[in-house]
Image (cartoon, rainbow, N blue to C red):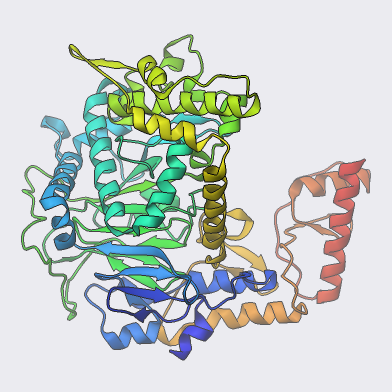
Length: 590
């Protein structure tokens, strides 16, 4: 398709017997800096027809340069260098995994999340009320709930903050955390090539990152429950950034996100689509389906909508009746459960683990400290899912610390894996359990200098660089996560833009013209703050304040942001921009 060359950052998908491959429209060296704005524009322009209730035709797919993800995995890269990137699982595929055990867990998880409260709470999901710490949920409430582990502003790893109601019901939430991890891990294991998954799991055994839910989970550090009403009008309001076009740029680009669809929709509803806007792919996210994809790619979910008078084909599940729930017991809600890998947690270097104590391992003095530490219940069980996973994780972190100290000082004797395991035994009832000695040994060996360590590090470096090279963008302007926030250039502002099929690429011409007018240079950031005493303009309000005081010796009064004057030529704007930048640097130096 010629349209792919002009409108897209990637070539048209090529269908093979066992997979689909997609090749970038840019070289392995990456996009030139001046083309980044164009790349972002291509990823942010979304065909209006994707909102439609019902299936699209082959001709419509061809017109809008979008492909529906179905039963095959998608590998992205240059010829001969493709790497697994995405896979959509329908109900039948999930039911076929592990003799139906994964679908059974999926269905159990869905019912636990959607079950109505009792008495006066019957119009709300009991699980959500527990997460929110409230007796009622308003349409104005933000309804994204995080579990597992996260990093605080200082970079330390902590367990995701929880409401008091969660800590009072830790076992209930832990069951849901564990089931989420088990289902997501099984889906990933079923589709990622064995050699690649083995390398990533070796990295996890070496660095011992904190993962949520279950001991089998070596990939996902964090989970999120995104809940909104079925009407769709409240999607962005209730989910904020994750309800619109965005990039999870803090995710680990070497790993994948798993999106589980827990929706419960009324009859005669179209399920909605999740778009991977850079690859021009979408998946129909019916209840009890899943999507595996890298969160570092721009993506966007559309809510379920009534079929109404649509003449398009409805969605038909390959497993009839599997998603049916009794509306007297379960709510109609849009629920997506996301498992994802935070880069800072996966890459929290072993050296840092020795030099700066993990926040989750710090000594505690009062209740607030206790619930935030990985040794303490009830908070720990909510994140780890099981006591087994908790104590195995603590044992591996201990092994990392001893191995790193020994690498720095050979006089240090590393305790054996068995000795470390003995120190982290735990009791459930009258039974005493032991951490996995073999996995602790892998952690010690992975951090011990030698040929095997250097070979693994070289392979991981190559994989990491390749994952970055295959991305057409890493964030929205200003390192922003969301793509619905405006950014400026000489032509004005550009946001997420819905367009008719016949208007695809209409905004690109303006951006290309703006770049060409600058002689191939990337367009400077907009100077929205104008000085009251001269013609200079500044990107930041704080820079204008310093300019007013130091240059004009006048008292600063707050300035309302304004657009760049239209009558200024490019040369004058560029000159003022450079002058303002130099002056800001001089002021900072002085």
